[in-house]
Image (cartoon, rainbow, N blue to C red; front, side, top):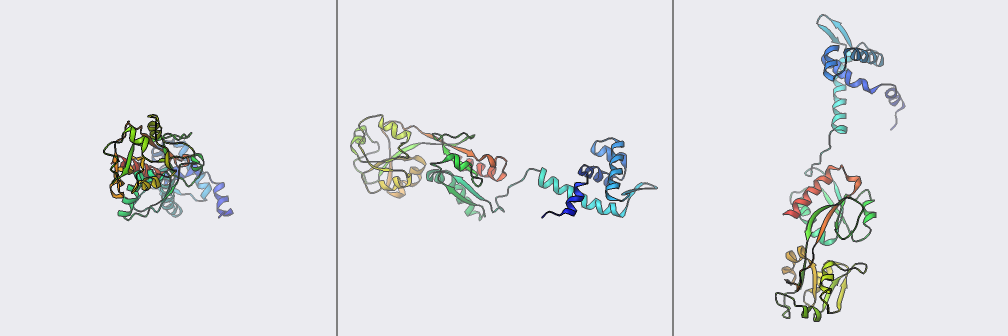
Length: 304
């Protein structure tokens, strides 16, 4: 709340006096105080004169041993030390983030597959350690620019094929795998070009666009028509179980979940191109130590 009395006094006070005044009250000697903060003795004498006028008190009075503090100066000295240390600590020192005590909610834009690969380990660790940090995930497949305009979004994890004008840093590289139902006896350990031309397929497609892996398979020619088209990798993954469908999903998902979901990984007839997942930090969070911590955790999780 605006306090005209306090604000009026501060408006008339040269705050540049506070540091010389602290040195004077600490050293109780003009020459030593000037040397302490690196100014000349006349400049320190001038600062003392102005401080006396501003506070209406002598502050330093001559004694047999040099200078002594007035009772008002003793009071000011203690308070001034606290104020200047508080200013230094809370304004000029780099802020710190403690995940063990923080209640910060992180908002991250990412696809469901990327949440599983990169963010699930961080959530699991936070839960295991009873941390109070929390997470909110926003789908990143569309409207990337508008996401980074939101002040609550900390960062997004973006496939390299999706453009952005913001700076990006590679987090990890992903690959693709073909998966079939574990009980599918038509396919052995490797899918042939002939089988791709005859087996029913489930395909990921977003806004009419397909993955580079699907395009690589299509370049072989003679693919069977898509039986199912899905814009969600999770539904695509689960649709294959118990059916003769064959599909292409991220290897991270396939390796971790295929066996427990009635699926198995099979070799493709041609190498499938991979892709990178990049960290794109919200420019508003450029100096946020909490986001620094989250990026460090992401790098550790994906490296491990």
